[in-house]
Length: 161
Image (cartoon, rainbow, N blue to C red):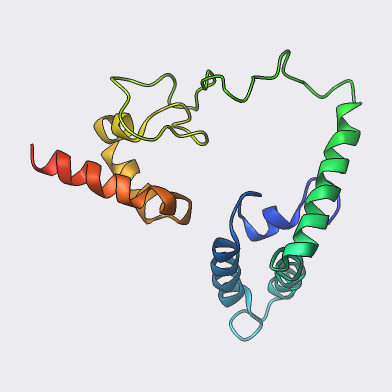
């Protein structure tokens, strides 16, 4: 892949996605763009990209090499004077100070705190109180897999009120 298009963007997954998520997304996209389903040249080109990306990302060794190449590519960009850089890097034990598109959290914190997305800096309890529909979606999405038990507990406690 060249330029800004990476294998992660081809498969439409986050660079931190685990192998199960990558495999699931690949299968869904492959079903959509398979030549038996869509005979257009664009679908054939897209299927070729999907196969190439998945062949690298499914193998842990190749994926590690690819990730290190991406780091080198990003490091080369760090010398570019037009790239904006944060003035100071936060320490690992500092609390999250940057918030997502939803802005600063509302209400008292309860549960795990999101470190990504539009509710970055919000706890699951705050999200449940402010946007329960998002929590429903998040519970069903692959990225929310690790929070499913906590979300189910939040939903049952809210239902009992």
